Amino acid sequence: MEKVVMNPGFWQGKRVLLTGHTGFKGSWLSLWLQSMGANVTGYALAPLTSPSLFEVARVEQSMISIIGDIRDLAHLKTVFADYKPEIVIHMAAQALVRYSYVEPVETYSTNVMGTVNLLEAVRCTNSVKAVVNVTSDKCYENREWVWGYRENEAMGGFDPYSNSKGCAELVSAAYRNSFFHPEKYQTHGVAIASGRAGNVIGGGDWADDRLIPDMMRAITQGQPVRIRNPDSIRPWQHVLEPLSGYLLLAQKLYEEGVDFAEGWNFGPNDDDAKPVQWILNELTNVWGDGASWKLDGGDHPHEAHYLKLDCSKAKSRLQWQPRWSLSEAIGQICTWHKAHLAGGDMHTMCLEQIKQYEAAQR
Image (cartoon, rainbow, N blue to C red; front, side, top):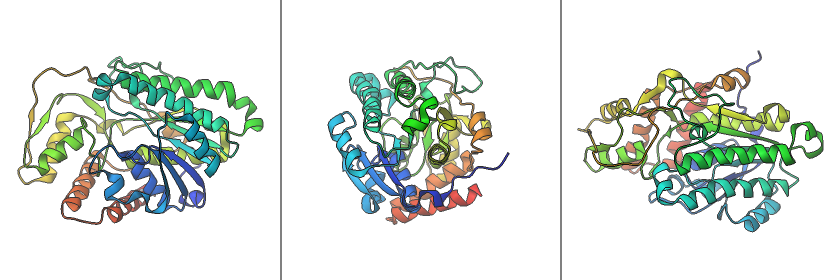
């Protein structure tokens, strides 16, 4: 089989609309797209944390940044009409499990109706050729299996966040079947796919109730990291891993259309599906300076104990492969945050790590 690679030259001059560009993953993807010469328009709420990667890495300096709510269909349609995107990558979301227990209505309205609004805006815009809807590994009905979930497994989700991502997948499938059916591709010319990734980690994440941000906050304050579920196993990966998958998928949708218009898993290799405790020990060891952790007792909302993705389809049909081991990812995170603490240029640091990742792909 001919090797497929994410081609940086493909993105030169492409009009890309990226929702959620002010978030952690969105900021990294915005910088990557900018570095390849894409004309990027971002649509998102203002950054939800302070500090934020969007601000410290000066993400908006080479793109059009529009502050808006994905639940505002009229505004979203106006943005699509004004900027006429060719490629749409939908990442705007309420992305936290624990927050979804506190604000379930906000979670569903953002993640489900936000996806409806996004696809409705696509339906009303004849410039769009490719859409990647980014959901989550948590979209699957989690049965705590020791093997990975495949793309044809049932959607589900125990908590409001996970369930809303399953719903977003069903919305994508319904719009594809109803308005962008593969058999009528020659008429509508739009290919829609979804990308499902596991727990992403990387420099510049300051969200609440996430492992690495919680660890970095505690370590930089000289305090032990308090951990809820040290034995939980997740498909950890550096943020650039799934982003490379989304970019490759968008390219294939644009170039080859409906052959790739379906769901895709982007997760780490099996040996990087590690328990939280392994991450803790590795990061505190790499960081040094007396970094430590301890168990946080008390009552906590339900979170899945075991979740893993089967990425055989992406590896076979897209020729996508993870490039950084989990140990390498943790090293990159420590390098990033130590540079930030030292007052470094984080825009340059992000672009340098993107270059390192691109070099590892070859």
